[in-house]
Image 1 (tube, rainbow, N blue to C red):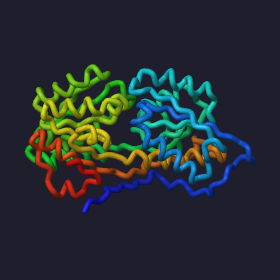
Image 2: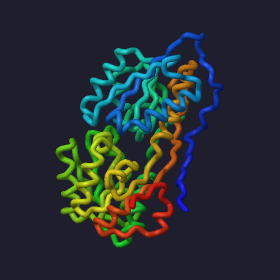
Image 3: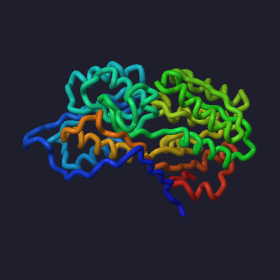
Image 4: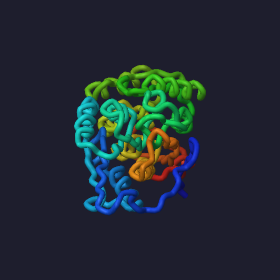
Length: 327
């Protein structure tokens, strides 16, 4: 029987529950800005989860909130300009997902509250002072830790017990790139795996980077979380298949595009939690005082069709743990 893999780790305390009524007098309309690295279609599940939770908290579009969106369409270099444009619209709060997006928003404003719906190490990225006391205009939900990398790497060893070397695919433009790379390397070496790194700064370098991993002797590919990669899921997944390289990703849409396996946070769940931060801020809370959560639900997805294509056998006990299996 399939089951969900759930991890709920509090950094400090849970967000308290508030009744669903507006803090302002009737007639107040809040403007919520959304800065997104991907496309509307890719981000649709997260957008809907945010809106749904806001409705549950008493906020309805066309009644007391207006939602403004800026999509980078996978062109990460556009984020700074889009962030500035969004700030010019004077939203009451800005919702972002991903470290690069959060950095762009933070550079565009130091006064408008920014709620992060999932990102890497916000302290390392210079966005907050600490998880307990953010101290600025950024708060929200973090999504990654070294333990998370270790869990994904362990899956590689479970399906490829004879593997001796893993390659990571990363983007040096990611704000906390170096720390992520160190965490991944530590996780790999703890499992007795040699570690190599291949890098892609843009979409044109993706195929070459994946090919270099295979030529370099890697038995598997570990794809880092990155805004660029999340906008080119099919290209990366198909490149891994072409090179017969088993790859583990951070989100289900890679698996839906042909990726072998993903293990990562449930992104709509992060957006729902972000809505709760938005609610508190609209009621008068200051981002500087709102403790960040590292509260995550981890989902495992597997593509057995891809496994057959590249000659990999997924043990039945791992398949049983998956919430989604493509045959």
